[in-house]
Image 1 (spheres, rainbow, N blue to C red):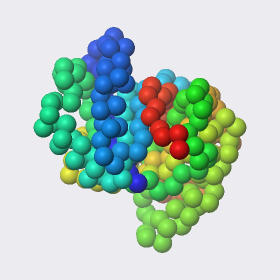
Image 2: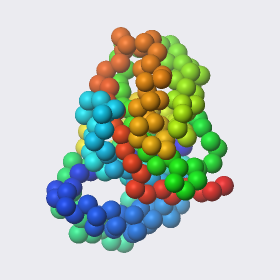
Image 3: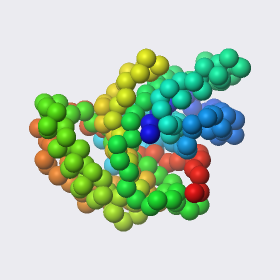
Length: 226
């Protein structure tokens, strides 16, 4: 499974309501209906004390697909029919499209009920100086300890782990290679979860580079109830 992550800022922040109304009602549903699309979300970054480093663009759209090729095929179909960004193309900036492979997930097997899981933390990091054996050990630790600890923290619903999947259809800088995402009922719950689980257990401090954490609220959520 793969995630396509699209990020941007608005040239004029005062157009946010119109942009979100168009994206949530028209643009995102059009993509979710494409073959091999599983679920999708939209996020708006908050200004929160738990953030670290550069929290990234204000808006993100995320689509879970069977393969990166499925998202690229949807782009081709959409461009053949009509330009998907309509009159918003000149009203956004800092455009970025990046793909990730889903490595693991913890938490409830079903999407949270209405009113739950409305906030995400997005941790981005690079790892340097690890050979293949070291990366395999990092993956084992992440799957066995880090991700379960985050998902079990009070107020947290789910957690995901992903790795960059470079593709010729990327747009803009790809950024860090590793993502860890937590979903919680409140933005402050994400800060508590991070405090309760020491960052990387101190085991990987010599390898972690470019650590950044953004706190976001969900603007759009499309998941199958099954």
